[in-house]
Length: 79
Image 1: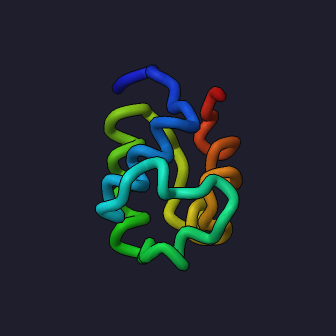
Image 2: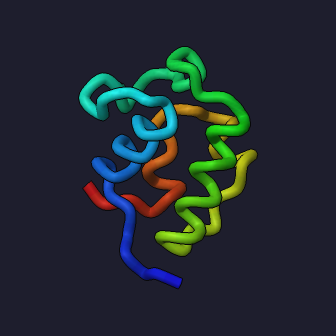
């Protein structure tokens, strides 16, 4: 299991990847559901971050507040 910490930039890039968007077009402070993030994509991110970064975040953690700025502390992201 990797111990490489997530960064805000990596979270944004991963979200953009599952949405098929450019990372520059994904805001940190807006509800990602408005950008097309659904439950399947959230689960994809949960599994990716568990596998690649050893996070213990759950689907519910992310679904409750679907914004990158809300996720960063949950994921232990460094700026």
